[in-house]
Image 1 (cartoon, rainbow, N blue to C red):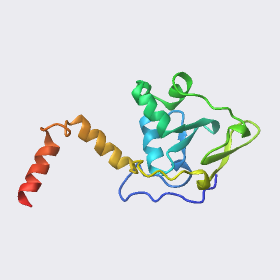
Image 2: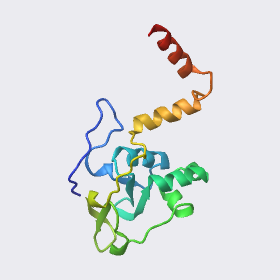
Image 3: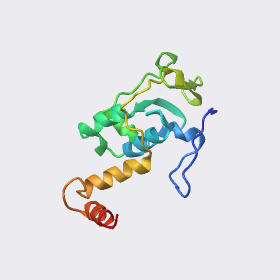
Length: 162
């Protein structure tokens, strides 16, 4: 596979991606891993493969809807796509959007092209990395949004020293 814009991994981040895997999730990946890849690649979408066989694509919007419907509880993207998500057709007609997969006769992903000309410019859409996404989850789960908790205490301490 050949891509024109590989991502730069963050220093010391063993989860950072380079090259093709920025845009491809395996069916054995978790839906949260797909969220992180969709955030990090800047497109908000990833292709999903089972080994090399192309299954379809997944977007942040679809993963967000899955979260609202309880669909992130399934352990793998493969299960998500089979039960809650939609499986996409493995044909050239389905290859529209930002990521354009090229398939061999057996339906295996052999190359993909990133077509940013199809990308809309969204003014209010959050632009974050997987690290920021993890921090948001941590803040939410630690009750940072309430008036108590370690984030509020740290903020109050830092503010008092300002």
